[in-house]
Length: 262
Image (cartoon, rainbow, N blue to C red; front, side, top):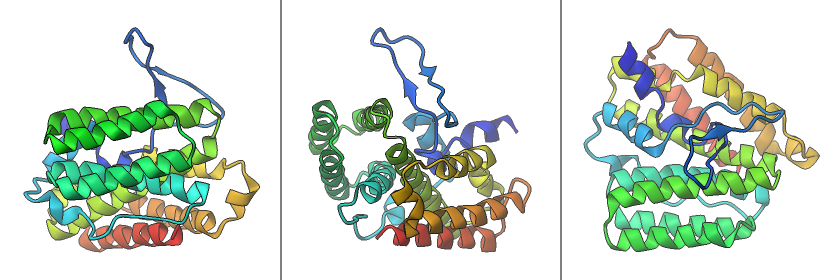
Protein backbone atom coordinates (compact mmCIF):
# COMPACT_ATOMS: atom_id res chain seq x y z
CA UNK A 1 0.00 0.00 0.00
CA UNK A 2 2.97 2.34 -0.48
CA UNK A 3 1.24 4.04 -3.37
CA UNK A 4 -1.60 4.99 -1.05
CA UNK A 5 0.79 6.79 1.25
CA UNK A 6 1.82 8.98 -1.65
CA UNK A 7 -1.57 9.75 -3.11
CA UNK A 8 -3.21 10.52 0.22
CA UNK A 9 -1.33 13.81 0.34
CA UNK A 10 -3.96 15.18 -1.97
CA UNK A 11 -6.36 17.96 -2.65
CA UNK A 12 -8.20 17.59 0.61
CA UNK A 13 -5.17 18.72 2.61
CA UNK A 14 -4.58 21.81 0.53
CA UNK A 15 -4.13 24.17 3.45
CA UNK A 16 -4.47 21.96 6.49
CA UNK A 17 -0.78 21.67 7.32
CA UNK A 18 2.28 22.99 9.05
CA UNK A 19 3.74 26.40 8.28
CA UNK A 20 7.13 25.67 6.80
CA UNK A 21 9.72 28.40 6.53
CA UNK A 22 12.50 28.36 3.95
CA UNK A 23 15.88 30.01 4.45
CA UNK A 24 17.05 32.49 1.83
CA UNK A 25 19.91 30.13 0.96
CA UNK A 26 17.41 27.48 -0.05
CA UNK A 27 18.24 25.05 2.75
CA UNK A 28 15.83 22.31 3.75
CA UNK A 29 12.58 23.58 5.24
CA UNK A 30 12.26 23.83 9.00
CA UNK A 31 8.96 23.30 10.80
CA UNK A 32 8.34 25.94 13.43
CA UNK A 33 6.61 24.66 16.54
CA UNK A 34 4.13 26.74 18.54
CA UNK A 35 1.40 25.87 21.01
CA UNK A 36 -0.59 24.88 17.93
CA UNK A 37 0.07 21.65 16.10
CA UNK A 38 0.22 21.92 12.32
CA UNK A 39 0.56 18.71 10.32
CA UNK A 40 3.02 18.62 7.38
CA UNK A 41 1.82 20.37 4.23
CA UNK A 42 2.45 18.74 0.82
CA UNK A 43 3.59 20.64 -2.23
CA UNK A 44 1.28 21.49 -5.09
CA UNK A 45 2.97 18.83 -7.26
CA UNK A 46 2.05 16.16 -4.71
CA UNK A 47 -1.52 17.35 -4.74
CA UNK A 48 -1.69 17.15 -8.50
CA UNK A 49 -0.42 13.58 -8.43
CA UNK A 50 -3.31 12.75 -6.12
CA UNK A 51 -5.77 14.35 -8.53
CA UNK A 52 -4.23 12.40 -11.40
CA UNK A 53 -4.80 9.22 -9.41
CA UNK A 54 -8.54 9.88 -9.64
CA UNK A 55 -8.15 9.71 -13.44
CA UNK A 56 -10.53 12.60 -14.04
CA UNK A 57 -10.60 13.59 -17.70
CA UNK A 58 -12.27 16.97 -17.40
CA UNK A 59 -11.33 18.96 -14.30
CA UNK A 60 -13.61 21.78 -15.35
CA UNK A 61 -16.47 19.64 -14.10
CA UNK A 62 -15.17 20.21 -10.56
CA UNK A 63 -15.25 24.00 -10.89
CA UNK A 64 -18.35 25.62 -9.46
CA UNK A 65 -20.26 28.03 -11.68
CA UNK A 66 -19.58 31.07 -9.51
CA UNK A 67 -16.49 32.30 -7.66
CA UNK A 68 -16.66 31.85 -3.90
CA UNK A 69 -17.09 35.29 -2.29
CA UNK A 70 -17.87 36.51 1.22
CA UNK A 71 -18.56 39.81 2.92
CA UNK A 72 -15.50 41.79 4.02
CA UNK A 73 -15.03 40.43 7.52
CA UNK A 74 -11.48 39.35 8.25
CA UNK A 75 -12.12 35.75 9.30
CA UNK A 76 -14.57 35.14 6.48
CA UNK A 77 -12.09 36.61 4.01
CA UNK A 78 -9.29 34.36 5.32
CA UNK A 79 -11.58 31.34 4.92
CA UNK A 80 -12.53 32.45 1.39
CA UNK A 81 -8.88 32.93 0.47
CA UNK A 82 -8.30 29.27 1.33
CA UNK A 83 -11.30 28.24 -0.76
CA UNK A 84 -10.12 30.37 -3.70
CA UNK A 85 -6.63 28.88 -3.55
CA UNK A 86 -8.11 25.39 -3.75
CA UNK A 87 -10.24 26.50 -6.70
CA UNK A 88 -7.16 27.89 -8.42
CA UNK A 89 -5.72 24.37 -8.45
CA UNK A 90 -8.80 23.02 -10.17
CA UNK A 91 -8.85 25.86 -12.70
CA UNK A 92 -5.18 25.23 -13.47
CA UNK A 93 -5.78 21.51 -13.92
CA UNK A 94 -8.65 22.35 -16.24
CA UNK A 95 -6.60 24.92 -18.18
CA UNK A 96 -9.45 27.36 -17.63
CA UNK A 97 -7.90 30.78 -18.26
CA UNK A 98 -11.07 32.77 -17.74
CA UNK A 99 -12.00 31.20 -14.42
CA UNK A 100 -8.41 31.27 -13.15
CA UNK A 101 -8.14 34.99 -13.95
CA UNK A 102 -11.31 35.66 -11.96
CA UNK A 103 -10.07 33.61 -9.02
CA UNK A 104 -6.62 35.27 -9.08
CA UNK A 105 -8.20 38.73 -9.08
CA UNK A 106 -10.29 37.89 -6.04
CA UNK A 107 -7.28 36.37 -4.27
CA UNK A 108 -5.38 39.63 -4.77
CA UNK A 109 -8.34 41.64 -3.50
CA UNK A 110 -8.66 39.49 -0.39
CA UNK A 111 -4.90 39.65 0.25
CA UNK A 112 -5.12 43.47 0.14
CA UNK A 113 -8.06 43.42 2.54
CA UNK A 114 -6.07 41.31 5.00
CA UNK A 115 -3.20 43.81 4.78
CA UNK A 116 -0.68 41.36 3.38
CA UNK A 117 2.65 42.55 2.02
CA UNK A 118 3.43 44.08 -1.35
CA UNK A 119 5.53 41.02 -2.16
CA UNK A 120 2.44 38.84 -1.92
CA UNK A 121 0.49 41.26 -4.09
CA UNK A 122 3.26 41.10 -6.69
CA UNK A 123 2.96 37.32 -6.67
CA UNK A 124 -0.73 37.79 -7.35
CA UNK A 125 0.06 39.99 -10.34
CA UNK A 126 2.48 37.31 -11.53
CA UNK A 127 -0.39 34.84 -11.65
CA UNK A 128 -2.20 37.05 -14.17
CA UNK A 129 0.89 37.28 -16.36
CA UNK A 130 1.42 33.52 -16.38
CA UNK A 131 -2.25 32.89 -17.11
CA UNK A 132 -2.12 35.27 -20.06
CA UNK A 133 0.91 33.41 -21.42
CA UNK A 134 -0.58 29.94 -20.78
CA UNK A 135 2.50 28.97 -18.76
CA UNK A 136 0.74 26.25 -16.80
CA UNK A 137 3.79 24.57 -15.24
CA UNK A 138 5.09 27.92 -14.03
CA UNK A 139 1.62 28.67 -12.68
CA UNK A 140 1.84 25.67 -10.38
CA UNK A 141 5.08 26.97 -8.92
CA UNK A 142 3.71 30.49 -8.60
CA UNK A 143 0.59 29.26 -6.83
CA UNK A 144 2.79 27.32 -4.42
CA UNK A 145 4.87 30.42 -3.69
CA UNK A 146 1.72 32.49 -3.22
CA UNK A 147 0.26 29.99 -0.76
CA UNK A 148 3.52 29.81 1.18
CA UNK A 149 3.99 33.57 1.37
CA UNK A 150 0.43 34.18 2.57
CA UNK A 151 0.82 31.56 5.29
CA UNK A 152 4.21 32.92 6.34
CA UNK A 153 2.85 36.47 6.50
CA UNK A 154 -0.05 35.42 8.72
CA UNK A 155 2.19 33.25 10.87
CA UNK A 156 4.98 35.77 11.38
CA UNK A 157 2.47 38.48 12.28
CA UNK A 158 1.03 36.05 14.87
CA UNK A 159 -2.38 36.09 13.21
CA UNK A 160 -2.89 32.45 14.08
CA UNK A 161 -6.68 32.63 13.98
CA UNK A 162 -6.60 33.97 10.41
CA UNK A 163 -4.09 31.27 9.53
CA UNK A 164 -6.42 28.60 10.90
CA UNK A 165 -9.39 30.04 9.00
CA UNK A 166 -7.38 29.95 5.78
CA UNK A 167 -6.48 26.32 6.45
CA UNK A 168 -10.12 25.59 7.15
CA UNK A 169 -11.21 27.15 3.86
CA UNK A 170 -8.70 25.23 1.78
CA UNK A 171 -9.31 21.90 3.49
CA UNK A 172 -13.08 22.33 3.26
CA UNK A 173 -13.05 23.17 -0.44
CA UNK A 174 -10.52 20.46 -1.15
CA UNK A 175 -12.67 17.82 0.53
CA UNK A 176 -15.80 19.22 -1.07
CA UNK A 177 -14.39 19.11 -4.60
CA UNK A 178 -12.76 15.71 -4.06
CA UNK A 179 -16.08 14.31 -2.82
CA UNK A 180 -17.77 15.86 -5.84
CA UNK A 181 -15.32 14.18 -8.21
CA UNK A 182 -15.74 10.84 -6.46
CA UNK A 183 -19.54 11.11 -6.56
CA UNK A 184 -19.42 11.58 -10.32
CA UNK A 185 -16.64 9.07 -10.97
CA UNK A 186 -17.15 6.58 -8.14
CA UNK A 187 -14.58 3.84 -7.73
CA UNK A 188 -14.48 2.48 -4.21
CA UNK A 189 -10.80 1.57 -4.28
CA UNK A 190 -9.95 5.22 -4.95
CA UNK A 191 -12.01 6.70 -2.13
CA UNK A 192 -9.06 6.13 0.21
CA UNK A 193 -7.81 9.56 -0.89
CA UNK A 194 -10.12 11.10 1.72
CA UNK A 195 -8.81 8.95 4.59
CA UNK A 196 -6.91 11.77 6.27
CA UNK A 197 -7.44 11.11 9.97
CA UNK A 198 -4.25 12.83 11.15
CA UNK A 199 -4.84 16.00 9.16
CA UNK A 200 -8.49 16.07 10.21
CA UNK A 201 -7.63 15.75 13.91
CA UNK A 202 -5.02 18.51 13.61
CA UNK A 203 -7.47 20.89 11.98
CA UNK A 204 -10.14 20.24 14.60
CA UNK A 205 -7.52 20.81 17.29
CA UNK A 206 -6.47 24.12 15.71
CA UNK A 207 -10.10 25.24 15.51
CA UNK A 208 -10.47 24.44 19.19
CA UNK A 209 -7.45 26.66 19.93
CA UNK A 210 -8.99 29.80 18.45
CA UNK A 211 -8.01 32.76 20.64
CA UNK A 212 -10.32 35.56 19.55
CA UNK A 213 -13.53 35.46 21.57
CA UNK A 214 -15.42 37.08 18.69
CA UNK A 215 -14.44 34.23 16.39
CA UNK A 216 -15.13 31.56 19.00
CA UNK A 217 -18.67 32.88 19.38
CA UNK A 218 -19.32 33.34 15.64
CA UNK A 219 -22.03 31.04 14.28
CA UNK A 220 -19.89 30.03 11.30
CA UNK A 221 -17.12 28.85 13.62
CA UNK A 222 -19.36 26.84 15.94
CA UNK A 223 -21.24 25.33 12.99
CA UNK A 224 -17.99 24.45 11.21
CA UNK A 225 -16.54 22.83 14.31
CA UNK A 226 -19.71 20.82 14.86
CA UNK A 227 -19.78 19.63 11.25
CA UNK A 228 -16.09 18.74 11.33
CA UNK A 229 -16.78 16.45 14.26
CA UNK A 230 -19.45 14.85 12.09
CA UNK A 231 -16.95 14.56 9.23
CA UNK A 232 -14.48 12.92 11.57
CA UNK A 233 -17.14 10.41 12.66
CA UNK A 234 -17.69 9.47 9.01
CA UNK A 235 -13.98 9.15 8.27
CA UNK A 236 -13.48 6.91 11.31
CA UNK A 237 -16.51 4.74 10.52
CA UNK A 238 -14.79 2.94 7.66
CA UNK A 239 -11.46 1.25 7.06
CA UNK A 240 -9.62 2.84 4.17
CA UNK A 241 -12.43 3.06 1.61
CA UNK A 242 -15.89 4.65 1.65
CA UNK A 243 -19.32 3.81 0.19
CA UNK A 244 -21.23 6.29 -2.02
CA UNK A 245 -23.49 7.43 0.81
CA UNK A 246 -20.48 8.43 2.94
CA UNK A 247 -18.99 10.42 0.05
CA UNK A 248 -22.31 12.19 -0.49
CA UNK A 249 -22.58 13.04 3.20
CA UNK A 250 -19.07 14.52 3.22
CA UNK A 251 -19.98 16.60 0.20
CA UNK A 252 -23.15 17.86 1.90
CA UNK A 253 -21.39 18.73 5.17
CA UNK A 254 -18.58 20.65 3.49
CA UNK A 255 -21.13 22.50 1.36
CA UNK A 256 -22.94 23.55 4.55
CA UNK A 257 -19.67 24.76 6.07
CA UNK A 258 -19.01 26.97 3.04
CA UNK A 259 -22.56 28.30 3.21
CA UNK A 260 -22.17 29.18 6.91
CA UNK A 261 -19.45 31.72 6.04
CA UNK A 262 -21.65 33.55 3.52
